[in-house]
Each structure stands twice: as structure tokens, then as C-alpha cells.
Length: 178
Image 1 (cartoon, rainbow, N blue to C red):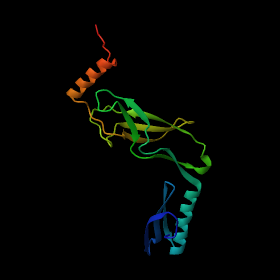
Image 2 (image 1 turned 45 degrees about the vertical axis):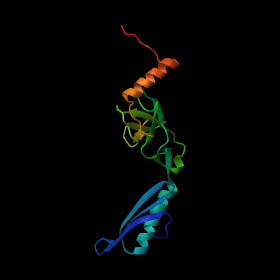
Image 3 (image 1 turned 180 degrees about the horizontal axis):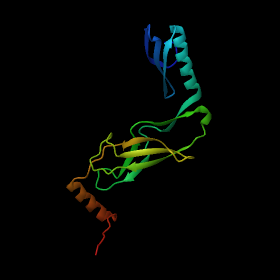
Image 4 (image 1 turned 135 degrees about the horizontal axis):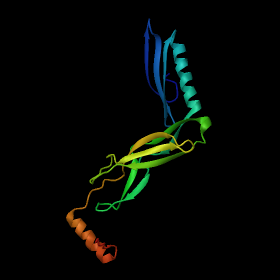
């Protein structure tokens, strides 16, 4: 197993009752497989069986990267904050396992926001992105969303200055409610 390309972990074992056993992991192209073989008569057969399982996985399956970590999925405008908009990003890469023969499959995603208050720090969960199969409309996976940059609320002085600046720049609008 140590000569298998991408192999990065394993646990071997042998007892008279369990015979030769092996659990191995390998990673290639953002795709990790775990192969487990139990009860083989000798270690050479055990190793060959694990390599065959890993080969099958890597030859027939692929990981489709939908969105990468820190890739902005949506921007939403905010008021009374240190930034004018919030950039929403997934907390980790969003990928979907598929057969290589099924490489034409397309995906869509929807962003669902939680209610939140400032301050918000990168890593705070503010919602979810839900990935769907475009054809069947079935949910495939969901990943938590966070913000790209830390955002704080404006202080009273900052709010006063912003209102004063907006009023003289023509961006401030008055609304009267009866």
C-alpha cells in the first residue's frame, strides 16, 4: 500500500480469527476514498484487494466542485454597519460526488439567510446554501454560510456623521408617515 499513489493512511491487522485486515485511505484531485478489506488469507491478497477497490473508485467517480470556500455566493446591502454590503461565502468547499459517466449533470443553489445582528465575524454562521440537481430539483447537499469580512455596527457618532454626509450629498431621503 505504501506504493499506491495518493495513499495517506492505513491500519493493518491480523488475528487467527479475523485473518488479514486492512483499512486504507487515498486522496487524488480533491477526492478521498476509504477501502476496507477483512478476512483475507494472506497480506498480498489483502493489499491487492484494497488497491483494486481504490482504483475502482478513482476510475469511476469524480468530485464536482460547485463553489469553493471563500467564493462569494451573494452580496446583500446593509445599513448602519461599517460596510455597505455583506459578502456571503461557504464555510468550506461545496462539492458533489458523481460518476464520471454522468459528467453532464448540472446544479443550482439557493441561499437561505438566518436573522443576525452586528457585529458579525468571519466564521459566524449567517445562513445556508442549498445545492439542488437542476433536472430533478432534489436537494443534493447544504453548507453553512459565513461572511467574508468582519462587520460591525456603526456607533452613534458614525451614524450621525453618515446621516449628515448623506443629507448634504443628496443621498438622504426623508419619509413622512401619517
